[in-house]
Amino acid sequence: MTFVVTESCIRCKHTDCVEACPVDAFREGPNFLVIDPDACIDCGVCVPECPVEAIYDESDVPADMRSYVALNTELAAIWEPIVQKKEALPDADDWSRVKDKFAHLERE
Image (cartoon, rainbow, N blue to C red; front, side, top):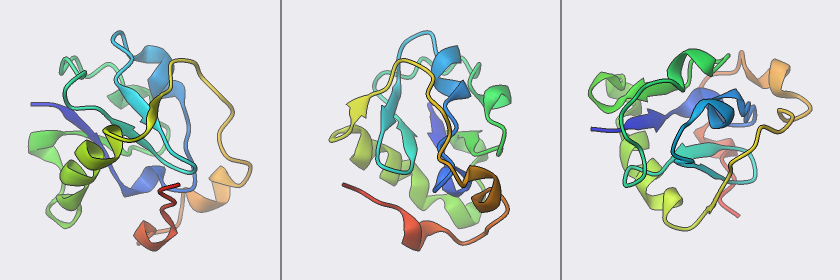
């Protein structure tokens, strides 16, 4: 099992979770974070740190977001690790209330 970052993170990219992660399992894209399933030790310390509640245990990912399990694996293979907390994106507060954000995900 691993933890998975889901849609709520898109265009927000809070990094409180990164700071909490003891094994540097997070990977950073332009406007989204993912968790490398090969690095994640399933400790769960990142979950309460996420202010937009975007992180789930793989077994608890809502049905309409199951595609994010594979997406985390795919993007973790190409994105670089992020090991320090950074500022959230400038308009993160506005985007935190938006639903159906997948079309806004930037891969490069």
